[in-house]
Image 1 (cartoon, rainbow, N blue to C red):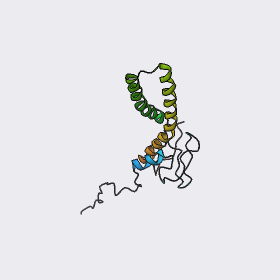
Image 2: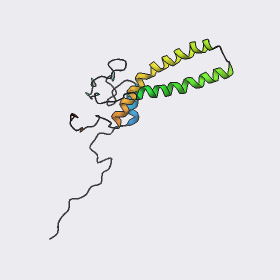
Image 3: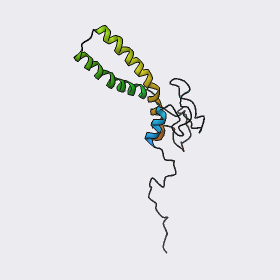
Length: 146
């Protein structure tokens, strides 16, 4: 007697049931402070406070865990912009220290504040696109660690 084994199937991207998520599109939408899924709903309800859900498509934002990554990225970005300018001005013109501090400190502060919200939005979009943390379609139910 011959036994039949079930047909084996090979997993491919096309056979996956999950929706396709483009990383760059989600990050661009997040950078513009819009929903990473639909690109229309607001991502933030305050300066750095992420809303609970999208008002248009209903995407739940509560599982995001941006933590300190946006601040670190802003420090790197602003540092890579300000430090070469400071070095160029210092080597070519050598202005007084008080003048340099009165220009570079406010410039660094304003640039950091301007970039912080868009970078946090891009991080949330990145997390959703890569299905990190709770941005999964079939997330297991939450179990208390106690």
